[in-house]
Image (cartoon, rainbow, N blue to C red; front, side, top):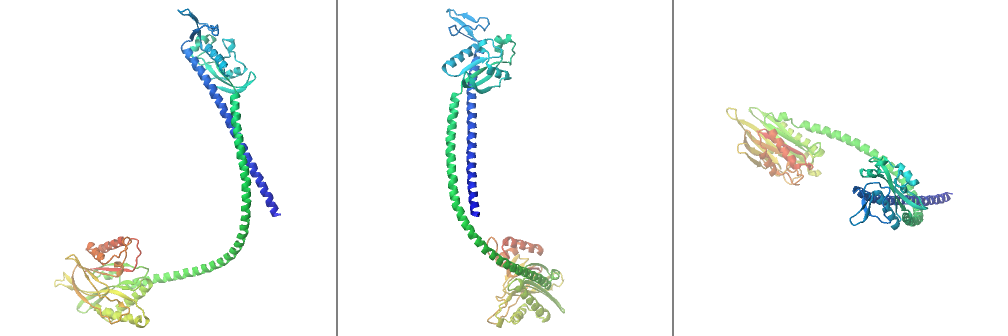
Length: 546
């Protein structure tokens, strides 16, 4: 039943398509016929207008010259209706002439046109001087409708048993016309009469029939091509419909399989969503823990107020992640009857983020234990003890752990002059893979003192003994302690390291008594170099103004 219904619907659709196509062809034929008829009518109107304008121009020429004298012949006899002085004259050669006015000239041109072609002119009026110029019924109707010069009429009508185009336009009274028609009561601008132009319609009708025949033949072939195309498309569409039906059956099978797969996917998505929510919860808990760890890490580091108590200090501290493996250390040791020691240190623990933060906690605890509790004040001895303690805490000899740290430490002591107005600073320096940068204010030169080539912790094949260097600096000199995060940072444009040389040049270039301004300038130069390049390591730097 379904197949029969589909068959009937296809037939109905085909019939409607054919009817629609034929209707379009018929509408096109009718529109083209209308256009042809309109164009033929305009052609006839243009021709009638051209004839009228020629006659009108000729009449105007005659009127402007006050009429024209011509020889009196059998065909051209004096105009008995022209009652003017000197209508007829005789030349010195005894030639008899008579004056022809515009109306007489128009009549003679009309008679000539009638002999040589089928065009007929008729000058006419509702109140003619010459009875032969009386308007026929059609002309009378048209003359009564004229009101102004621009009026014109073209109609198809019967004239003496023939189908003709009749064109008519009014003649208006001008100043030159009053010589003959003034006595009839006309004024300038009145409609005096008109000239009708009668043209056989046979030529125009033949042209119209010829064009319509071409249109019919053309549309017949177009209609035929369209019908053939419809049947051809139907044949092809039937073929593709069969293919589509077959494919549709295959798709139904695929869809059934997809529905089964979708059920499995939904189940998997629910499980994934559950796991995602679990991970998000765990991430939130971890983030809270790391944020708390950050607060703890900040709490163990000395305050800027504490560090600025004896020497003005600028701090640049930028963790790569939330928590950092880099940190700075400060402690003051008061001695009986002696000047106090001030310990400044920058520590770079292996790794960054959480692992680095764990190492920083170990390092901070060891520093406080060794300096404050064990009262070991020589930086190299502090390093030696830290090196052993890290190996012991992380059981590096048996676990294979290689974690450690690079560290730079300065123990500083102010030594005042006798008048207490000036002082020098004795510095005991030790560095584990980190150098010390010293800027001499009086000479405006920068000096770099290298540290030892070993880190604290890690696996060493032999016992390490760190060295110490004693330096005496003047008031207003500056020292720079930094981890390798700033030196090793790559720039976005150059893809090269910031480097020790550029850092040294930056120190000299930005020298300023106000170390806050100098620190900010160093940061600005560093950021312009780095731009949008990812930070590769934790960064920590201290500037100490002596």
